[in-house]
Picture 1 (cartoon, rainbow, N blue to C red):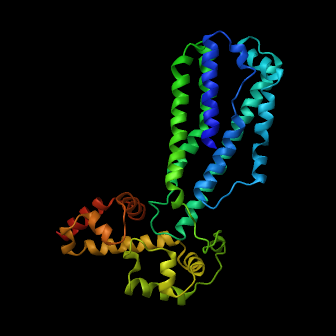
Picture 2: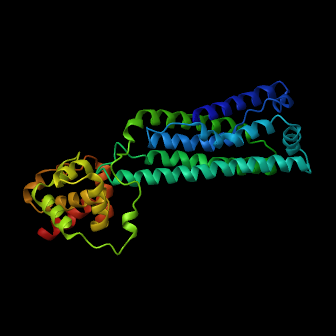
Picture 3: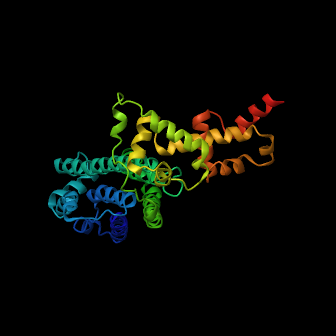
Length: 338
């Protein structure tokens, strides 16, 4: 859907340039295909689909595209044609202000949907951390940058075109117009392809809580029995050494239901499953570094033995917890032992 709206935009650009070359630009006002009000909803539903493979588009969701229908009708009226043409004269006619308001409302729509889409991504990421100890193949962080680009693009585009209009008399347009939209088209194609490749990695198990409401009540008593049971398991069986450990597997070892374990971890450990497991992995890594035999291995090899399966994830988590990189930590440890 997102690709469709940017394909329409590309066709729109082609029409503008072809008609301009034949001095028939006035005809373009009757066939305007810009679908500004469809981009935001399309981005939102795209985000929902890649974060939830079970999502299905229903009739009620069509309400999000009602402004798009009104926009299409607006482009067929004389208000649009007079208002758009009036941008090239001075002073601006009153209908040009109507057209500009319509454009900026469309931009505001894209920004709003972009913010909502980012919120969806952060919530989904939080849910994944309740279940998985490794997010490398499941993370949707790659989608944040495209959303930010879409959300800010039309503001930057409007500012750029106004600067060109007032200070350069539109002489720079040919240098940034086509390259900008070609880049945007490439980006749109890329995220569509990425969404297709990664779709099966975004499922969120149904047996974990969808809201972290357990952490909001700071007066909940600690379940010492669960804490002791969890710590004993971590000490005896060290399940965190398994790179594929997840909430379901840990729950089986504890003879508890995944939802219950997730709630207990949040309540009693003040962290989610992801942080709990990786904290144990970092502690194990630090312990192994104290063994002279481990110095025969690289730091990354030791990290992999401790359950990590990604260099970038290991470095990020270690730096976040210890405030230094693994190599810096190792140098300090080595200097102390000499």
